[in-house]
Image (cartoon, rainbow, N blue to C red; front, top):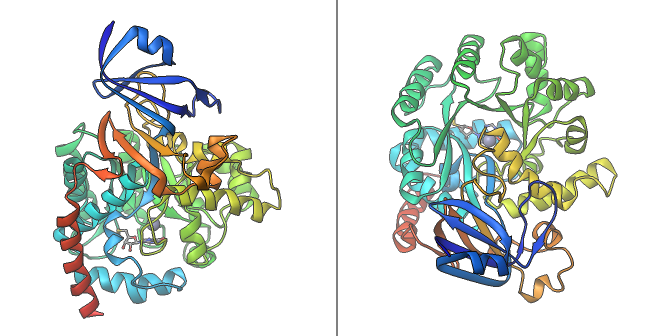
Length: 439
Ligand SMILES: CSC[C@H]1O[C@@H](n2cnc3c(O)ncnc32)[C@H](O)[C@@H]1O
Ligand SMILES: [Zn+2]
């Protein structure tokens, strides 16, 4: 008998790789933070002795969800400005509020709230874009959640930096000091084509190639963005990024609601990743990302929530459901974006876009034990013919019972293990008073 840290025996295991098979009567063995084995329970019990053995008789075990685009500190601005189109929302409400309140303390407390919400909803990894990224990295490290930290770049002075070159230099300094640390990875995060000039974008293209680092950017979010780009540069933003050397396999193009057929083929040829944020796109009335056409063309499409000031939650179960329903409605094809594809987008495809697919995104021996148990035993999810159908179409994030990152339980029976909820509530309440008073 081999001694191991943990054996988990759920009712179903959804590995996501190598295919859509759902396993029943299997156990997953975890040792030193990694998935050591995935095998029939009888064999697991004869071969391994677990320091702990968790039996979850009515649960599905799935890979941790990867939120491929968010702005975690914006939890503090949730519900501050609703029912507006993107540029009015940003220019008249969000940027003024950020100008007033954003600092290290805002980013610290907002990230902590976001981490709590994400872990309670089965998200184990998030790809962030915000000011004071080192603070987001520190909070993530303290909580134990996996984070891809966006090294933000914007031609816009803020409390964090004053101009694009300073943003890039500060980002590189953070990368140098924290690379390889814990569960952190890094992306360049130029905000959008309309807020970053050619020179810094060219510099980022060179740096991304040199450092093999993803570039995480809002692109083709609204029709207005395309019109403005045509007027200023003579081409669509995607074409401009291609001219500047950025539209390649490092690019994670977030939103992509406006796409011509030729541009879809370009994305596929270039190996560019698309991050689909259906709820933010719906709420800001930005448009519809042609997900089905992208998938058919062979583009890797991941899923993100965007920030909670435009979503207004960090619920990846909700995002899977909305993505699946919207794809059918928009394409007029009920077979568009089936449940297994939605789950893959929310797990493995996010990992691929972040360059982390060797580490996370599926329940395969050798990968990190980032996983989530979802209780399918409630009346609302009876009967169960296909657990993946329920994960996408029937259950919600409140049915997540346990979340592990690198084998460490960060949510156990719905209790956060590394975040003091009472203290967090006090901090958020102080922000609420402060922000509401200023409004
Ligand atoms: C400079 S940090 C990130 C920056 O992005 C703003 N933001 C949040 N959501 C969106 C979106 O959907 N499109 C464009 N910009 C967005 C956020 O308020 C921060 O200022
Ligand atoms: Zn965004």
